Length: 219
Image (cartoon, rainbow, N blue to C red; front, side, top):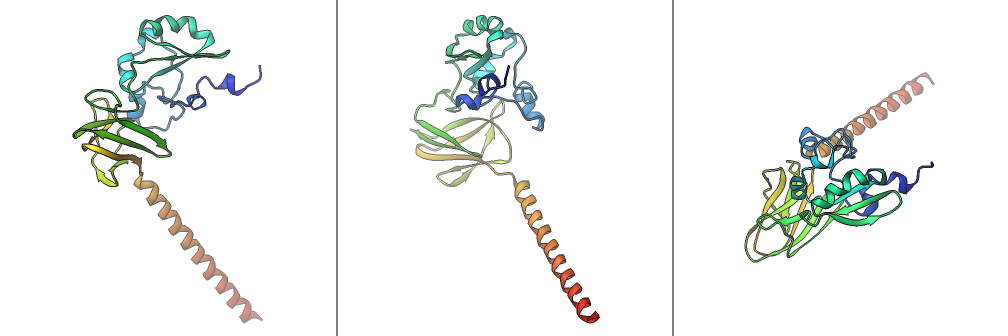
């Protein structure tokens, strides 16, 4: 059978407007491998449904489970028993929705996103959060020292939760909160590359100048 977006897409969450819990990048650090149950190396979960750690996955904001049609009989009973329900169904797959999964951004104390609106933009997450008092806010992103947080443009500290998510203290009132990835080694690499190109350019200029001088002398 020919490969189509439908037949290839059961693993690709982005085709459904979703975000993968893990998968497709074997170069991730060990912390990512452990946090995502080893799915950074293979996005498809192939173990029995009874082995799924639903409580852990809900804490990590996993709300959708994509199941190939030939695996529905093996997984549906266990998924429905956990309170999941069918969300989408087509000729290739069935997607189940878990209402118990937490939002991608939520108040740490309550696990809900009341008063929060957020969006992903490239290497950052922007949230508009409104709280009556200072409160811890969790982002379902694995903590890394390469992330930085800004509240109304002012840098604030980020800490890791018990399971490794990113958390910060949101001040009371309505605020713009941004978490963005800023790898300092990337900037260093770009600067070194630029320096290397500048040196190479200088060498070529000197080489050409010397070649012209030699040519002029011989002439």
